[in-house]
Length: 205
Image (cartoon, rainbow, N blue to C red; front, top):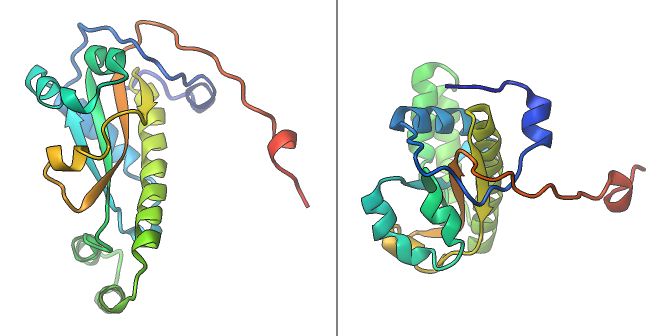
């Protein structure tokens, strides 16, 4: 389904779109492919502390509608919504990830065992864990938005929803909601926005 492999166009012409064509249906296979590619985003220690909830069907849209008292246009017209949550439990997927790496020959078993022991014994600061998880969630969110354009879709990142109750609604008590993304085929152009140039925000020494 990919319609655009021009990276410059994907990067420079992304817009936050707030209204989508309501007659467009995106297949589950396309959504999974979009994710599988976007999940190549970097992650500290490759721990991948992100969880995604895709709200696609009319039933799901009705079920989780209460989480979106704002940004209703995106919610109601999108082909699907994605809620990104950060796992507050440190290294909760480490064994799964590293076992698969050993099976695929990309990590030695002794290296896996050493890392898993270090994670188990680590005295972690809960605030540092969630800050790192939020950072990783941001990386993957940007990948999702850019990859969506390669699939002929547009997106809008949304911070304005009921983040406090989202983990409860999705039965994920060990998570925090970070952001939501709307996906669909645009029904308006969005607004071109100005970005300050490097000289206004950075310096080279």
